[in-house]
Image: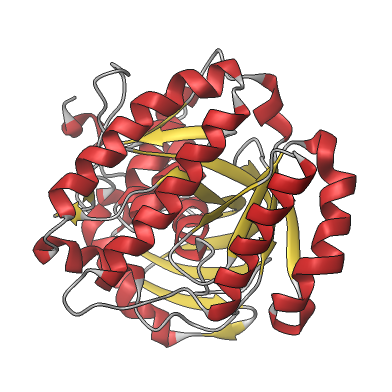
Length: 356
């Protein structure tokens, strides 16, 4: 598509305040490796979550000059250490929202989950901020369609964090060009659309917090290391092929096939980390303990539970709502002990971002 469609005309600054809540997401088909600027080397597919969210409020104040400025507060505290990443984001999107010049932004944000610990905090944060920006643009240009609003929000969010493009809508989103989906794009995510099997609308995601600390290697650094990874090209092909296999499974509800692809994708992601130069490991010993326990439980109980991993040590347990009682007992009796301070987050697939 012609990206110039996303360029807004400049307009006189106005006072405006808005607040949006955007969810994290958990990728089933993993994206790992990108080109400039935030173009994925392979398509990805994710569940949009419900309770793991970032809430962001932005107060747009007209400035006395044509310069752009902002203050960022996280959990009520002014956090200038976030400014470099935010400055990069605003620089990346300025071309598409030239009206931003002439504003001073007061940005206040908080998460319902630990920051920088392998739950997609950048995804939900950049999605929430992008929606606030688009809310003002919608106010400035009221004829904007809802479809364009969400598409451009995903486009802007991607320029801050690639996976943020998938945190705008739900319950299942796809980002990256794919030959099976004609409307797929490297520039924004799209909704799975019609045909999603109803079992996935209420799919559960229990996030076992193995390690709530900051990762030893950031996701940005991990993506960069894919440029010299000897297995990168095969990995990109594997992910694309797995997406083609998963799309019909998401329609049929074949959980046995779903589990095989999802777990393979999780382990392939971490295999890329372990074969990078320099190599690194984000899993912890308790991550592996949980995986083995899940495999044993699934074999003995014949329940459709599986795991996936993001770029961190925490384990996402995925399973249908119908089995929540039995699996919750399993978590409390056998898995909680492997979590930091026994903590985990009970979440499920959600419908996407909301204004509050």
